[in-house]
Length: 483
Ligand code: GLN
Image (cartoon, rainbow, N blue to C red; front, side, top):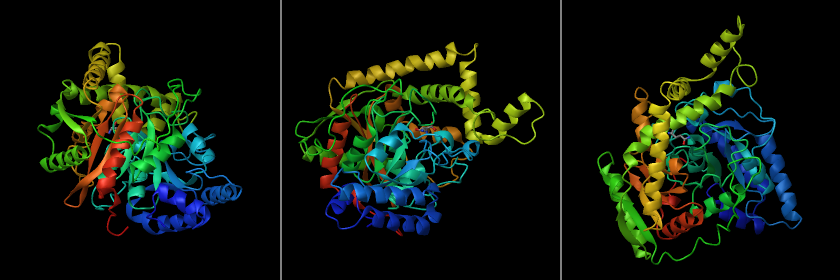
């Protein structure tokens, strides 16, 4: 049963081949047995899962038939879950039980999903390797010595290892698409504002966006349907109708214009990844797509701009963790300053402290113009590049990552080397655009992802292209050895 996709689960439940409770118990047993190898969960919510599964079975017995009704999923551990630890991968929030559900969590629960647990992540979603978690590194099911990507590495590893059919995740600079690529999954970062951020613990508020990680585009469509929509509780949520994402999956790709940015294929890209990207383009051409070279001239400035803006916003967002109101408090503080200093010094890990220091520096009076303002100007230029490109093409295609999943520990002494891994994903966050990564092959047994970007609110187009591609390829059906 653990090999079933969400779409197959929906059919199986509708045909009464199994109940949600049976499926949930089977997956919980699998998590118990296999998760110690990959460390993809921070909390397993067995009791909640069984009660939600029973409730879903009762709703089905009463005649309801939603696609997600009774579907087991996991939530990245930065979505607030009422009464359940919501740690954000940090010692700071190790003792934090959220007093309410995030909008994403409550919407998916209303659709009938069953929460099996909270997945591991880089501390406060800062990272590309899932090594900065207070709960230990997550391992890549494709090769246990390698990272699964980050920051949603737990969600990705759990779905890749068939412990869950799908999970929620968030993407501030690539944290849905990059782990999807490194674990052979399909991951979708929606348009900024498409999915509510209410109850999603903030990293960089102008960049953060929730979305699904699953094995197929078809399943991402089902998940996005359950997650998307206007939320008055999130002031940046956008009041646009939510289309039926499953309805457009099979649309023809005849005449689809694919843009290949020439800047994507230069130095720094593993040539074996470049070859697989070109092979995916050939497949899409066979389906009727036409290819055009385009240019995104400001792409080279994206990483420096992002690594000013994201830490700046993080330094402000994380100021609420002061040892007074939430989470960790140091022992025996001598005065208020000591309480602040030691609670933050002991509660936050090294990468989070680095980001807070960089961000506070960039926002300080003497440097604001030189760094933060400059980075915001670059952000606008990057958005303008995309707007110009989308006059000529329908989607932009390229690698999701420049390199394969690296060995755990390999980049620990060089944070900038890890930042550079985000080169292809970060621009979509700076511009607020939707992006998807889909499995496109393997090199030395490690997965490779292809990224597709589309204009605002064209998630349906991304899912359509990925679905058609998945009809003629089988990369997304491969299973890691031992799982
Ligand atoms: N790797 C990027 C960072 O560390 C992106 C993380 C994310 O998308 N949450 O900031």
